[in-house]
Image 1 (cartoon, rainbow, N blue to C red):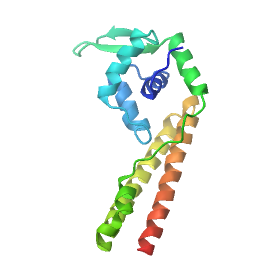
Image 2: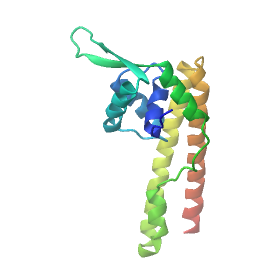
Image 3: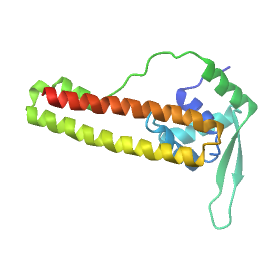
Image 4: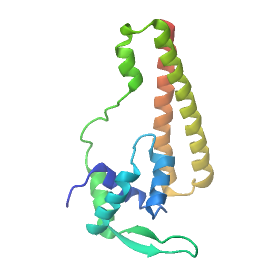
Length: 179
């Protein structure tokens, strides 16, 4: 079977949920995946076009009175097979994190300790806000989607984000003390 990029597989996976239009897919990404996988509108529509052309999904044009027409995509058996084959593949490599805080800290000798402390305190505030957002998402998933098969897996990925954020917060506290 033809190989696709990870964005294609992400969108195939999203099509297994109730998301059907490009707008719904983008909303799903912004509310669920964006904490660990970013996909822009500029990637979504060309990918949907490819998915349709390769018969991984079908498209139906719908229109509601007073609203513009929209394309709704549905995963085909071929699309589901492609997704399953990708899911069964072993990881190619560990994820590489790009972290501006670590990059700036690495070269921290070229700024004042006060500037470095401010950098870390700002990072700490952002981490706390992210953690609170994760807790809100967790509450929403638990409340609305607890009976869905997907909810368990969504909570696993959310738990990863929470634990990584907790570790980063602990690292911030220790690094601030050591400075």
